[in-house]
Each structure stands twice: as C-alpha cells, then as structure tokens.
Image (cartoon, rainbow, N blue to C red):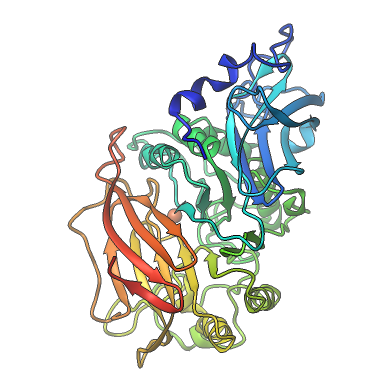
Length: 503
Ligand SMILES: [Fe+2]
C-alpha cells in the first residue's frame, strides 16, 4: 500500500477536481457542505462504508447544519489512486433531513486487501479525499497495523492524538467509546463545548457531534483509514445502564434522550444500515473479520447492562458477583461465545468499553462497579467459555479509564491461576488533560496488571499469524497543540501463549 501524505488528505479533493468527471458544477444555493469531513468504516473483503454529512453551517442550534428540508443527491466515487484517474466504483446517494443529511454508502465490488480512495460531490462542491482499506480475503493473513483509542473530550485538550494516528497510515482504527462528551461547557477549558448546556435532545446531540467533527485532526484520522466504532456512556449520559439514567438532570424521559443520542451517533459515524437505530434501540455489537488473521468482536456494554451494583462507585458488595446480573445482556453473551468458538481467525480481538481484568483499588477490595468487576459472573462465563473452547489468542481491547494499562487475564484472579488472555487498555485522546508522566500506578494488589501510564495517546498493534507487537504511544501534552508522539512501552503477545511478553 502506498503511503498517504498529509498533503493528499488536505488538498486531494479540490486539487484533483480537474482530472476526472467529478468536477465542481455551477455553484448553487448551498455553500460548502463538507465541513465535517469524510469517513470510512466497517471494512469487508469486498468494500467498506463511506460517510459524509452535508452541513454548511454545522453549529446551527437547530441541529440541521444549515440545510433545508429538501433532500440532496450526493455523488460518490471510489478510485485506486488519489487523483481519481482509476475510478472503480461510483454512484449516488440521497441525503435527507430525516438523517441530518448524512449519507452512509455501503461500497461493494472491490478487491480484498487493497487501499482505495473516495470522495463525494454535492450541490457543486467536492469533498476532501478519504482512504478506505478492504480486509484481506479469508484464507490469507497479511500483517495488520491497527490503532485504537478512546475518550476524546473536546474541552480537555486538542486532538493531536488523532493527527498522529492519521500520520501512521494504519489499515484500521478502532474507537472504543466516549467519542463525544455530553456535559455543559466549561469556562476554564482549552476549548468550549457547543451548545453550552448539557445535551439531552436531538438538536443538541447533533450540534455536539458536528462540533467534534469540525476538528481538523479528527477529520484527518477519519480520512486516513476505516474505523470500527463502539460507544461507551458519554455518547448519551455518564454511567447510564440500559434505560437507567446515571443522574437526574436534565429532567426528561430517558428513553427519548437515548433515542436522540443513538440517532445522532449513527448520523455521524461510518456505520452500516444494519446499525441504524429504531427508537431507543440500536444494534451496535457486531463481528468484523480480517481475513484469516483476526476477528473483531465489537461489543456494546451499555445498552443491555443491569444497573451498576451498589451505586456507581467503588464500594464492595455481593451484588457485583450475582450470576443473574449482566453487563452484555444474555443475547450478546451467547453471540460472543458462539462467534469465538467458530475460530474464524487466528486472533480474537474484543473491542469494548470498560476495564475487563480484575482491578482492586485498595486492600479492602474496592473496585469500579461500572467495569467488569461489577459483573464478575458475566466475565467468568466469558473467560471460561473461551478457555474451554481451547482459544489461546484472545486479546481484549478497552477504553474508558483515561490511562493506559496492560494486563494478563486470569482464569482465577484470586489464586492467580492461569493466564487465559491479554487486555490492552488505551488511554484517552484528551480526557483528563495533560496527565502526568511519573504517575505509574501498578499495585501489588493486582499482580496480573503489568503496566499503567497516565498520559494521553493511543495503542498501536501490528498483528501477524505468530504474534501481536504492541506499542503504547503517548503525547507529553494535549493542552498545547502539536506535540510529537512517542512509544513509552512495548509488549509482544505470542500466538498460542496468552499474556504479555517483553519485546
Ligand atoms: Fe471517558
């Protein structure tokens, strides 16, 4: 695959306009509508989703982006080259106000394991160029460079991590939740949320998503590679559980609020039509194969969970291990184990939200009840399920906690009997602000937890049939723009030998 330069990302759309048929037409009443960039996602062996949303005035308070109720025809092209001299697929989609003039095109008919470029045209304007990548054919296992991150708080810092991710030219990017934050604007942050209130209706969720999408670093990361996204809590409300809200304000019907939040999330993400929400429900958990190398099981640990045990804090209580309580919901638990037992690829990556390994916060056993420690029977059933199926290459990918961690997953955490998998926890893009390079809190209470770092960034994995090379990538600051990225910890995970090894 050829390297994609920053110049291409920024200039490609307009610069190549004269080369092919997708030239600007006579300008009409809509001013430049591609203010939110472009994105690809959901790679398959024969295609991927390409996304954009028409929004000439993205922060308009009505959430409609400056568009009228009229539907608009959006043309799209997919090419093997960045100048669109070799267009291999093209078509049109309709952007309607029902979906905030977003389009989600499911491109098919492409070749496996290839790099492509795409762009849109609407109302006489041409979009920036994005890069899509198809997954390799089943039966093949070429090396995969995948980056994953989580927790991008617009006010807490700049999105430099997204810029650095784009520069790595990966095959795939995972975002594991807290893509936006729902809170009201701060008066002391480096940037200010729009709207300034805590968002709770459809117009406000749309404006907040649009504001995040106007960030040029975020746009660069979306344009650089296909993404697989799953939400955590802040895409709706802090620490909600199914239809149990996390706090009491703002007042209102939480079903209506969740429906609005899920709809705005779908409108702004490169997801397939199968993920389009129906009222307050959205089918987000799904499986994506990467040839015979890996399977991504993307989980939803918010929509179906029982309420957090003993409140949302760190108190210890018997409810946390009640076998009747669930984080995934029964259907998703069954779906996950059934899928893993099919052994579709060498590696099983579980892309999910909250801390998976046991993590005692103090000698009296305090744990986070929002994480898997609050649902230990559910965790135990999954771990025993994949272990008894003979699976040795399970890697859990996690977000949420705004610090990086690396752990061995144990069949029994109390006795430390047997490593049966590995967990890699990404830090945040910006949540938590600059962090502290000397804050490295591994505790003897958790001997299976090997690494912790409180800086912002992401994790890079390079996966082959024999091993996963893991690099924890960090920025020293995010409250100042444009810091360089550097690796501060690396591990190897060997196929057939679960757990973290020195590189
Ligand atoms: Fe977060």
